[in-house]
Image 1: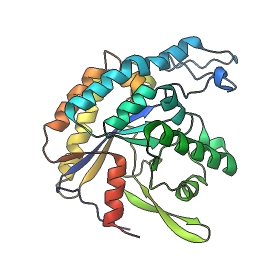
Image 2: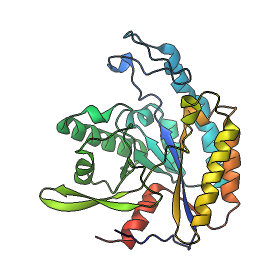
Image 3: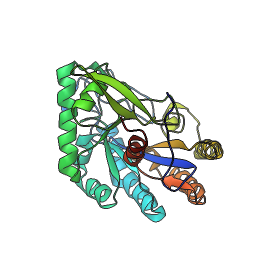
Length: 288
């Protein structure tokens, strides 16, 4: 099915900065998990069920040092962003939660904790979604309307999200345009907006590709932006740039994000906004 998607001032590209906030919500013996989170920068997974204090501090770096750097850049450029946040991470970082809300940014739920939701049975997943929703409402003053799982979803996820009042879902990598996804809910077909995400422009590549440099990441992000911008002359596109406080917030990487933001800001016909704004725009243009 072909849907209509135009941007508010006839811009050519909808630019989505997606800032993942997971620090403090990861797997940990202290949180009752069977094992600790793998050591990100080294790719080491401990087999022993012991608390990994070193890796916990690696995550904490994202809150203490990475977040201020990222927030300063966002404020300087005046960009409106989406923070995909694990609810517990915001509970543990109330100053960051307040700064996100004060900046007018959107918080999209990244789960109650940053754990593997795809292993859950239906009732546990429903409780997980509800807990995340209420926690984010408490920390930011507004409930989330979008959802991003940790890697995978279940056959029940989208139905549960609709039942819990969510407008859009991000667990999809199939396009550069939004669409409706229809699910049977209580015997009635209902829709949820899919706002596709992207893995290839994610800063996670610094971990999974040894030797990957900030300049390589920047070059790829710019090439992606330029291609989608050119295509946008005929049909507006969405570009997603996935970021993590503990990854892009490092001293040797933050400059690449700054230069990418400069590249975006140099174009006058780009809509830098939240994914919720994109989902609402799409839903208005394509009412059910």
